[in-house]
Image (cartoon, rainbow, N blue to C red):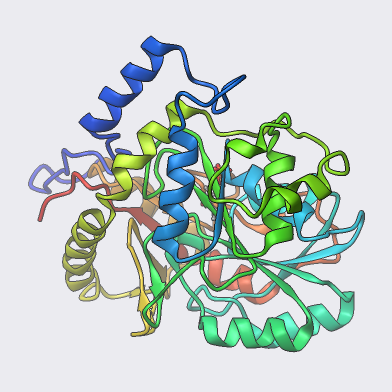
Length: 383
Ligand SMILES: *Cc1c(COP(=O)(O)O)cnc(C)c1O
C-alpha cells in the first residue's frame, strides 16, 4: 500500500465522453416516434443517419460518408469495397487494436503486420519490404492512440507501391497532419463512435471516401435493402444501381438513435480537443521530469487530439512493470501497459492474435510495446 502521506487520485480516468443533453433529447424524440431504423418504407420521415453522413462528409472535406454499426464493420466494408480478394494479404501497422486484424480476417484477407518505430509510427522501410514480399495491394493504417505518421510520406509510399490506403481514424477524429484532417488522406477512412473514442454513441462507425465505386458498394454492403435512394452523401443512383445485386447485404447499418447521439457531439469536437490538450500539456510537464519515463515523441506537424497519453518506461525491467502499474492503481491512477501478458484496457500486441500466421512477428515493435504505457485523459479531468 502507498504511504499514508501519499495522495490518492479520487477522480476516474475511465469516464467516456458525455452524449450531451441535445443528443439525449433527440434520442428521446426518436424513441417516442419509433423511427429508429434509418430507412423509411415509403418515404424517410426521420433521417438522422442521413443527416449525420452529410455533415460528417462536409466536416472532413470528402464526397461520401456511410454510417455503420462499428468501426470494425466500416473497415470490413472498406476492404471489400476496395476490391480485396479472398486470401489476399493486407498490411497493417503492428501498433493497433484487435478489430483491425479482425476486420481483415472477416473480409477474407491475410493480416500482414508491419513494424513500428519507437515513436509508435509505421516503419516505412519495413512497409516497403513487406509489400514487396507479399505483393499486398491494401494498407490498413491505424493512427493508433492518435499517433499520426508523416502522411505525405504514407501517401507517396502507397502511390509508389500501388497500395490502396485505408485509414483507421479511431483516435483521430478532428486530428490532422500538417493542417489536413486525418481521414482525408486515404482512399477510404474509418471512424469509431464507440464509448471512449472522441465521440460516444456506445457503438457506431463511419466510413468516408471520395471514390464513387467504393461509396456505392459500401452503401450496399452496409445493408440498404434497395432503399439507397434515401442516402444523400452518396454517388449518383446510377452508380449504386450498377452494383446492386452484385454486392451482398451485410446488415451493418447505423440506426437513427445512434446518429442522433453523434450529431451534437461533432460540434463539440474543437472544445473537447482543446480540453484534452490542456490536460495533456500539464501531464507532460510533470511526467517529463520523472526519471525513466519518456513521453512518446510527436512531430510538430501532427495536430493530434490527445484523449490519452503514451510513455515508455525506458529502463524498468519487464518483471518490475506489473508492480509499478499496481502501485499506480493503489494511488487511484489506472495506467495501462502494452507489455502485459493479458490484454488490459485495449492494450494489445501481435501475440494476442494467435490466428495470425506464426512467421509474422515484429521484434522491433515488440521491444517498444513491452515498454509502452498508456494513460487515458477523460474530459472530466481538471488541472
Ligand atoms: C476502437 C478501435 C477500433 C474499432 O472500433 P469499433 O467501433 O469497436 O469496431 C479500431 N481501431 C482502433 C485503433 C481502435 O482504437
